[in-house]
Amino acid sequence: MRKKVIAGNWKMNMLPNETIEYIENFSKLVKDTKNEVILCVPYTDLFYALMSAQDTNVKIGAQNMHFEEKGAYTGEVSAQMLKAIGVEYVIIGHSERRQYFNETDETVNKKVKAAFENELKPIVCVGETLEQREAGETEKIITTQTKLALEGLTNEQVKNVIIAYEPIWAIGTGKTATSEDANNSIKAIRNEIKNIYGEDVSENVIIQYGGSVKSSNAKELFETSDIDGGLVGGASLKSDEFAKIVNV
Ligand code: PGA
Image (cartoon, rainbow, N blue to C red; front, side, top):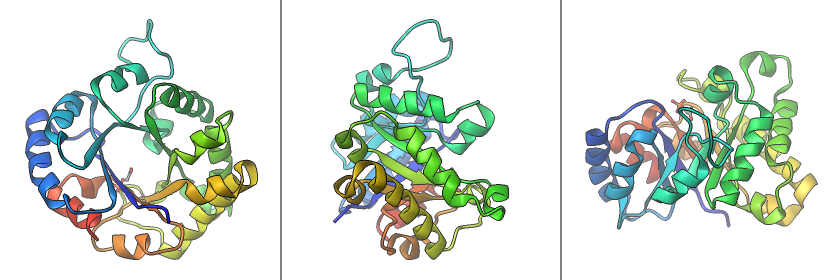
């Protein structure tokens, strides 16, 4: 049985004092959950989040990283740097990064490899645009993105990847994919992984749904056969609401 992994993606929100206050409240609310709980926070909040989450079951992740270990890349942060302060997870290839910051399938793949080299667990995002969906290309787009993101990884590494299926038209729009639709897309991703890495890997890999997840729709989504939790943006900014999703 795969466990549920619920990750919050704060995006470019929250200051250090808000982070500390949030985690103080949130960690109490989710202390009894069997689900894995992750907060992916801005770089400037990481240290405060790690301190506040000590001795709790809340894990901390970053939202991006560079694939090089070090060097002349002004403004960038490497996997090694994240690992050194105790970060455990990192979101890679979020659609906002693909859309606004030139992230490609190739850089996503390089980052996933660099994350594993530094013992960080990658949360790899894939998802189709509305146009691609309307053209009937959803399955092709998301299976190709998955294949390219994981290229060159060992079976053991792929087993430890978290994939977040996030249809771009559902992100921040209030529109959620129906649970049946989201489950079918996630099944297609799992099947692609089975074809390349075998059933043992595909049955173990965690695949989340993301896109306007909230406490009112989380139960229905998470109850499906293949959705192993969620990557939650807007609804993770309020600790009470996010705790409801984790405890659903
Ligand atoms: P949303 O964002 O929950 O606000 O739609 C999800 C995400 O972008 O990860």
